Image 1 (cartoon, rainbow, N blue to C red):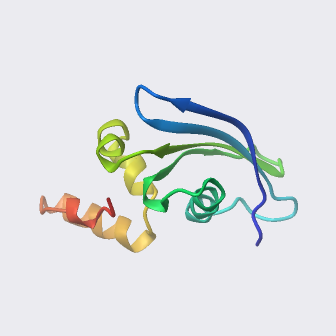
Image 2 (spheres, rainbow, N blue to C red):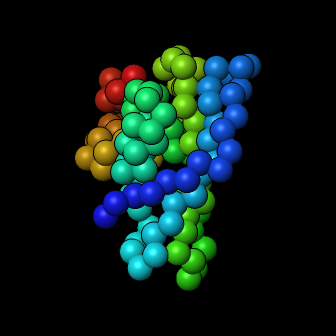
Length: 117
């Protein structure tokens, strides 16, 4: 599946050192795109590191052939860790890492080393 992303709004937030994007993905006749695929495509479009890109929201209405979303691109990992909630950070990882992090957290073992940043 090829993903065509149209950036609707791009805003620089100097207080937090991040770029905030609102985008739309048209996927007529196909399923809603995977969050990780969207993350890779946005990072490539903006010319930034994938690990500092966070897909905050993907919203597809029933029967619609488009998805609206928000993405945040951080300047450094310190701000990303501070401003993004834990569940959003985990959502932006591969499935096997997500599973491992939740298992380690449940057993109260260290898991922070599994984050890429």
